[in-house]
Amino acid sequence: MLRVSIALLLILMISAGFGHPSVSIIMDSKGNVYYSDLKQVWKISTNGKKTIVVNGVHTHELFLDEADNLYGEHLWYNGEKANTWGYYVWKLSPDGKLEKIIPPTEGFPNNYSFVRDKNGNMYLADRESKCQKVVRISKDGTKTKPGDHCLENIRWMVCDAEGIVYLIDLHDLKKVDQQGYVTTLAKDLPDKKFSQLFVDPPHYLSGLSLDKQENIYVADYSGRQVKKVTPTKQVSVFAETKIPWSPTGSLLAPNGDFWILENSMTNDVRVERITKNGKRIIY
Image 1 (cartoon, rainbow, N blue to C red):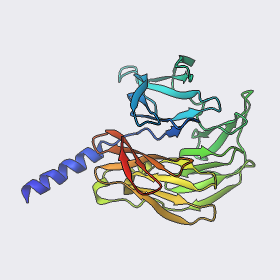
Image 2: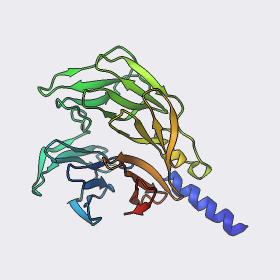
Image 3: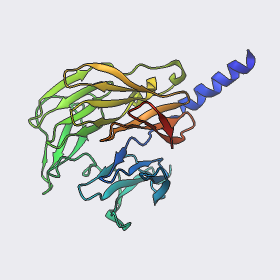
């Protein structure tokens, strides 16, 4: 009994150290999958082989353009004495060329986003005031804040090709159309498990993904589940992960396979693929 209690205590202590994971798992036009473990960016080729394609980068989000160029960030802390942050944005071409498209800069990328529509507009959160809003940045750099609805705590977001944004507002899933009209699609999505007792409330929900039918897949880190929310606001558990793993991002492939980016209590990262036939494959 003592051993069980000690083991449980260790689990809870480790879980308390959970921070800010990577949330992106994306697929290029050839079927290669990319994800970050906050130390490097990995590629899973169509034959299942894993390789590192960008080393030494602390990347939370990834983006692929129509030409299969891969984009990400590198974020770092300058120590307690300086108490500042820095970042740069990198681009990896399909031919393997790696370049910095935004040079090392102090602070956070508050004028750049990996959430984009087909026209190249970028979408990010304005958290400078209590009344939070979505900011749209056009190709020429013009910023707009569609609508007048205040959001409480914008977390992760995704958008479709037309610029409709889906986002996590603390524990709720909301939709923001091109005019800024806000619709709540699902409230109180987290289903927190006891083993996740010390996960902070802002981290209960993680990455979002969309399919072609505008269904939204939400990684519930606190509940070890990926939830599916339909355009008609129907919520269901689409997939579950086993302890000590929890989902932080997901991807529905064109062939029907479902890919899950998973984070453990010790902050290890892996990818799980659930084939359309139900077979589970670990990478």
